[in-house]
Image (tube, rainbow, N blue to C red):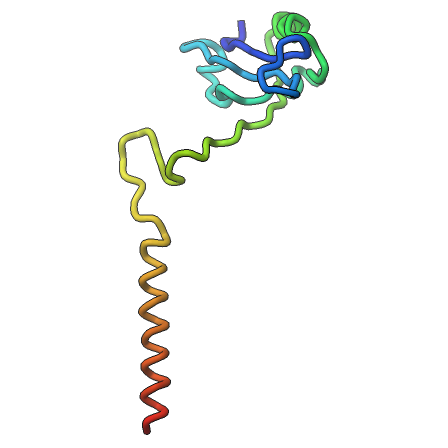
Length: 124
């Protein structure tokens, strides 16, 4: 197989009011896992140029089973979750300081310096 499972279809909507086909699981050491481009949660728009819109789940599964050796997928990358920090990385390394941590105090200091300079020039 291609090394991944799918969910969705007109008869088994994964997301309300959306009959699209989604990657639900990538099997470790399968073709998709080894390739590395497909991710869980990706929406699959087409297989070998065949649009997956408005297909029943079993018909989509059949398309994948008959896709052949060289398979071309058109996908839409899933949206990243919004409940974690933007710079979060799962590799255990620090992502460094957020840009705002440096810019905000720097801009505040620059504004204060300009204000002091203007006040000083008025007194002269």
